Image 1 (tube, rainbow, N blue to C red):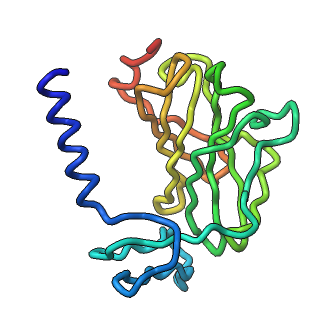
Image 2 (image 1 turned 90 degrees about the horizontal axis):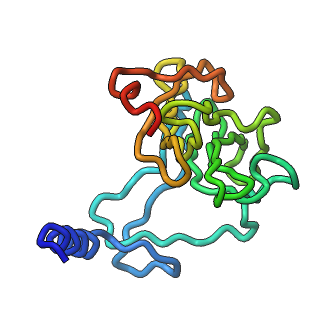
Length: 196
């Protein structure tokens, strides 16, 4: 094992031991509560708050899990759905997720679903909302979309690959709505990655 790899592993272990634990169960008296109440100002997307200094956070699984399952047979996400990202914007929960018919072939796309309560999600009828373009740095798959809203523009940062497997690059796409049409961000650096 190289010296660099050893330092990296030791650094990771030190970091992981210093982070607060995340576990299931009943909170004890030393734990700080975390508020998950939806904000009253719905003009901007939000995420659940983080309680700095909390000893740990206790999650309780929702009794009606799973919230989203693979799609019907012969649909783009019939094999698997994974990697959810949710933002609360203008009174609704917006879920972006990865889907594929078969991960072994490498084709992954990004789907979209909405919910009024964060518990019951409805897939968008034109899913997937963002797919590979059959050329360039994102020719084979796009996945792990991280959405946000800048002014009135939806922005999606995503993992991309020109070959099967996890992508070595990150792309950016924008759209006037969460369902598109998406406009890809291009730069000299991204152009250099064509054919990766």
